[in-house]
Amino acid sequence: MSDYAFRVLESLRARNQHEREFLQAAKEILESLAPVCDKHPAYEKVSLLERLVEPERVILFRVPWVDDRGKIQVNRAYRIQYSSAIGPYKGGIRLHPSVTLSLLKFLGFEQVFKNSLTGLPIGGGKGGSDFDPKEKSDNEVMAFCQSFITELYRHIGQDMDVPAGDIGTGTREIGYMYGQYKRISGLYGGVFTGKGLAYGGSLCRREATGYGLCYFVEHMLEENGKTVDGADVVVSGSGNVAIYTHEKISRMGGRVVAMSDSDGYIYDPSPKGVDLQMVKQIKETERGRIRAYAERVKGSEYHEGCRGIWNVKCDIALPCATQNELDGRAAGTLAKNGCFAVGEGANMPCTPEAVEVFLAKGILFGPGKAANAGGVATSALEMSQNSQRLSWTAEEVDEKLKGIMKGIFQKCAEAASQYADKPTNYAAGANVAGFLKVAEAMMAQGCV
Ligand code: NDP
Picture 1 (spheres, protein in one colour):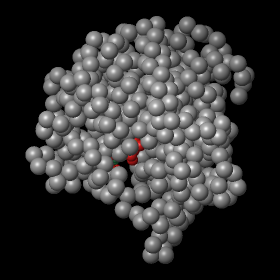
Picture 2 (cartoon, rainbow, N blue to C red):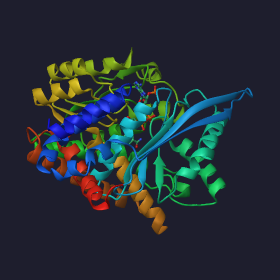
Picture 3 (cartoon, rainbow, N blue to C red):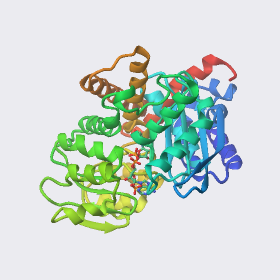
Picture 4 (spheres, rainbow, N blue to C red):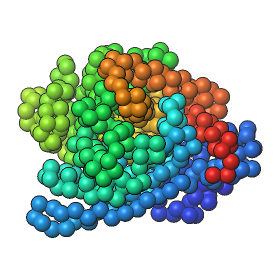
């Protein structure tokens, strides 16, 4: 690693010792930026990396709300406004008990590069709370969302910071948050994306992250003489990203044989694979557990413990649940079972050890900040439609999404050829390609 990138990483380690996930993401990114910094000594002269790794602003606040028994509950919430170098902060809101400052800093930092890769004018941000919407009544979720926005509204705006969904934040939560924002601010506009279709949402936004992942994987396979058609696919998770990944990968001729939630995984060896309508019924309509699938679908199996899903034999693995869900050992098992491609639908679902295994074994690897960028790209398309007071058709949005994902893949491949150890190291390529545009904007804007 170049001396400059290494020193910045060492300083980050000293100053953020307990931020495990953030340091993991920062190390991976800074290592790939080393050759770029060697080539551009001007970056060090203006302390560009030191500024890039530090969020522009972190907002931390309490969220008091009243539960159904009349008791006051208090959650902790954050908004990380990481970088506005190329546009207003943009990134989702995660509602999950595991949310910490470190987790959101990792997600916010990754978002800066991802948003840059889309080619659209959006900066990077992320937010969330340790509130768990699971097993809460609608009323409780609404009470939380309203209190959350009562504080956050002053920090967001359609030209300032535009939040969206993430784990635990779906259309219901966005609806409650948007309603409260409008009530307090009196503004009707594109301050959130992932909105319902009746009040400014974009067709195809719900599907965009999963569909975009499949488009990226398709390009990656095509480039390397392979195809989705006829492949057995394991998709972890059964939330927004996983469901629409299943939908598109099946249309491309893949067969999804396993899916999961945080309790365990299902395996369906039938000729058609996992029945998507049943998963949608259980997860989207009933908000139930994935184990119900095996109770209802003959011939399928349920296994307790979500990490076992990587033991299922497959050609393509698409981790779409959460960070660090696929480790070095699981990567070894995938390799042994003949898996030839991995695409990250979730953010950083593969540990550094897993990525090492993929690169060493020649397994094609699509990193999340590129492969799952279709969601935020379509969010930016939602912002454009809101500004124009127009609604595009699903076909129009999907066409634009396809073009954006193709562009992202090409940028990753080009940057990998120029700066990485091998031309198929798309992980390094994504970091470099995302960085170059942000760096150019920062160089132009002076000491900010
Ligand atoms: P959802 O909340 O809709 O679904 C998350 C899924 O992952 C659920 O099946 C959930 O299971 C499972 N899961 C959550 N936490 C864990 C855990 N600790 N261990 C195992 N499984 C877990 O979220 P999304 O589908 O929106 O997001 C999934 C991933 O994709 C996240 O990493 C997110 O950051 C990323 N992403 C999402 C985008 C979007 O547009 N939504 C855009 C880009 C990236 P359970 O139901 O049991 O909680």
